[in-house]
Image 1: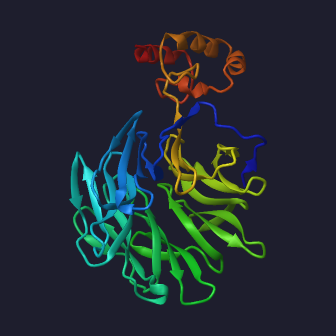
Image 2: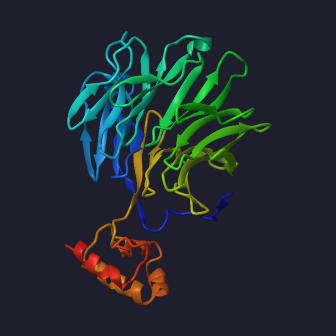
Image 3: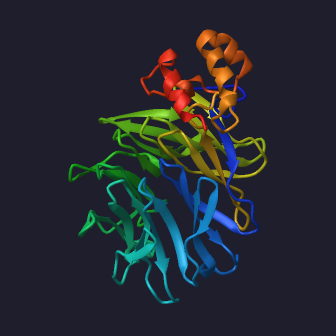
Amino acid sequence: MFLPLAAAQVPPGYKVVHVTDSPEWDSSARMNNRGQIVFLRRYDIDDRNTQEIMLYDHGQLVRLTDDYVWEFTPDINDDGVIVWSRRIGPNATAEIVRYENGKLTQITHDDIDDIGPRINNKGHIAWKAWNGKGCANAGSEIRFFDGTTIQGITANGFSNQAVRLNDFDDLVWVRYDFCVDPWESDVLVYFQAQTSELTDSQFEPSAVSINNLSQVGWLHRVPPDYHHEVQIWQDGVTTTLTDWGSAPYLNNTGQIALDRWHDDIEVWQVWLASNGEFRRLTDEPVWNFVGDINDRGEIVWQRGQFPEGDIYYMKRLPLGDLNCDDRVDFDDVDPLVLLLTDSSAYAAQFPNCDPSLADTNDDGSVTSFDIDSFLELLP
């Protein structure tokens, strides 16, 4: 189990960027490994048809849609391909669309609601297809699109929701049974064309995530006080990450972004579990919710509750930035020399900087062999 840090901070080599600061409601942020962020912006709080898809691309904010259509649940892969659900008209069903190179393509054409698409780096898409049948009218099944055909993954009559997938087309989701009171749920994984149940007799497991290491994370509530506990499954073994976290997001290096409820100020805050440590990334009397984490350890989250919300982003500083000013120039030369000659003095002078950013030749160590590749980064 990870051990908590006292007075946790943003880790060295990162900075927090205020992506949006607008009167509109910004939410549902997702990101890729290139640092591109896609999210929703609602221009009229009372009208969900004014929700538009926004893209933040290295400091540039672009509005991708401008129509009177209910757009929701966007996602983005490393090629910059974006998917989301959209509903045109009051009686229309929600359909999955894909946005690539400025072109919008509709993926589904049916009479059920296709909701919550997630796209991997193959361009394959998974989502829930809500049919409104069964108990609580919540029946929904998991669908998968391999770029050519749509496949039904489930047909169990329950409410299958919140599907996630990795780049190997492994899927994980939550199956809800609303025919019992209190309702029950389980976490299921689809691996090598076989479906397995990962939870047994846990109370309300939900909020699933999966990475390319075939690790699966979720939360469940623990009686009698029903606190949230985060668990990680891999190779048939389930371990407890923490007994105070919620809504884990896993990247492909084993880092985990998650939320934690703080009783003292009664808000959710964003945390990072990495290399055996917990770091508290937000510390303010405002709700903060994790949206995603990429393989560079960059995290995007929503600050604030409906009807007010902004997007924040913990950004990795660029390779070669050794004085932590978010750029690489000749001001980084002296810090590099100091790091190579006296690493302790460098750590004392630049405590919030990450010395691994000096590994510009990507050989896994910081040595004089990095000098030539560092010089190539200078303007």
